[in-house]
Image 1: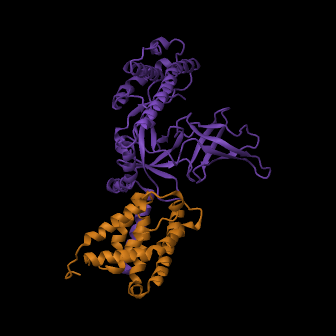
Image 2 (image 1 turned 90 degrees about the vertical axis):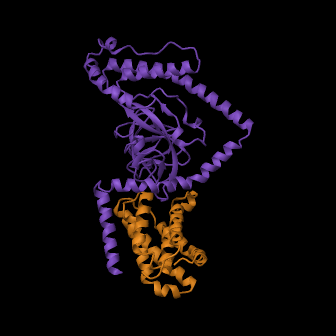
Length: 356
Length: 162
């Protein structure tokens, strides 16, 4: 028995070392997870069933009220989208005048939470999109209100997301008001982030919105991360103590957004955005407003000579990447509007435009 | 054990499957920290009662399954469960004679040790838990031991698993 123990212990230790150091065991793990990850799905079943039943028996008045609410919300969002197309165009033009770097634009896909990590000391969640859905390691995850975290482990049809508040997680942020940069670290408390090494005299105060700065090359810039809750100036401490509350509902959100950044040129993006908006309006029977299309690159050429050579280089790359994505100008549906009972795979692919 | 024909072995596996489900089932926040070590409890029971069937190799495979579920290093929980099963097996003769409360105490010690190894391993991999609250699951498991034990014994009698 002792020999057997020795063999098994040595085997497990070897496995751990190999798993920690090399990528050798990743395929094994992903094959095992194909079967095993169903357990998360099964444990999630009661809640799913409950939601299904609840939506079956939801009273008519409730549904009508909810419908009304969603309609108003949709109207508001669409109004904002109209403005966005124009703003995107304006932003592109201004950036071209300044010869500044390209915009980063993101495609967003809806994923659903299927499980929490059972270990209470880590803040990780399991989502129902994996490698086969095009998720990549390190991919940012949002909810409707802000950044939630990043993908840390990929499995074929599921992935594990490390939340912002995990003690091992930090994210570079910026104060939205004045652009002050800082690093927000998780504390292990789902309602608190801490800003590290902020000078005592730094211009930061209660209520400031912190947005991702994009400096870590991992998170896209400009997404809300947290709001500053308290700033403590303690003369005994070398730095100010700044505590912030994540804007995302880290422990409540069930529908999440996965951000796919893409590499089209700014003009194409702005045009696509405008066209998508136009198509959407046409589909909804709204009288088309003046189509907000950015002038073709040839037209833009003269003021920005540096941009001219860049454009042809970028164009051949684009069609392949473009075609690879299914249903580009898909229905822009807010994720909350997806009925809870609907199977997660049916969640609509939303496109969303954003600039750096 | 070539001569004895084992019967209803699938029930043992069914209990392990349920154990895996329980070990990831969602719990309220304050109870997460108290989640019993279901797989270890089941392994301890079956190793005590069917040592020819459930042993360290079974423990190892279940541990690997748990590793995949928890996203820990492949082999971490395998090591822990193997150790638990080894300790239970080596105490088997005595443990079966003990009254229930004494069994509970032994289980508490074994699981507590296992959790300490767990703490040590996760410290090595860089996710050190901030407190010793990690030992709480061992306590909860020890308190659950009588119920698990009675329940599974009933199951075993009923289906004549051997």
